[in-house]
Image (cartoon, rainbow, N blue to C red):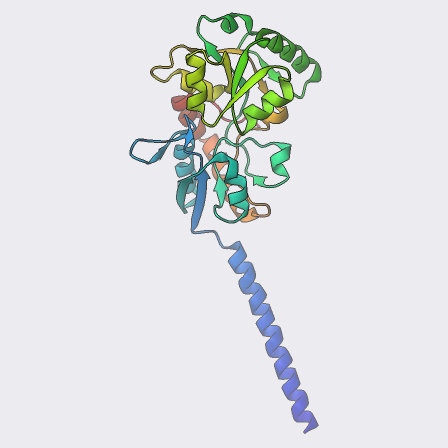
Length: 290
């Protein structure tokens, strides 16, 4: 009887070990398996990065790029639109798997989400009325200034603030432009807008004197029919709160999806796809440089 119990115990133990081993193996396999579908969220109202056409479909540089990346990753992607303000919380709640919305990699955001490698460089400058006072008084618009260079950025920002003194600047109500203004343009009157269209319309109508935005985005906006009155002015600032470039936002620890996006983005950079798509959209190449 004692021997029978011992054999039975060993059998139960062996079965349990086997089940545990198989369970672990299955868990690893499930975790490592590539996703069959990726749910992407964008704003659908940030021309020309992403926007909603009259028929309700999404278009823009990032929509074209997202479709290209999904083809490279060989996965089905669904792209939905919602407000920028709630994207990160929706991502972390599991409603979406990735954010593609001109989202800059900043230290503040890196605390709560992960990012792919950048798919676009970003620098922030000003749009104003052609022939207006600021078009002349702001420093040269073709100069790039690193916000990490304390001396150079302090000098450039002092010149900008001098030109903007007594003026009103339009920014978006959330995102990098608002943070840029609150960080570097203290003392300058700022008016916030929920959409770039409303912001730019007020500038063209003279209700604000200038707008702040990514240079590539403002170039695309200025090239649109009806916006011929907009010109770019002032230096283009990069680094600091502007971040390390635009990238795909991902949940913390989603290493599988990050590896997939990183590989696809690097391929799109290397074969000139990002260059081609950005030049036809922004009239400049936004491909990141390693």
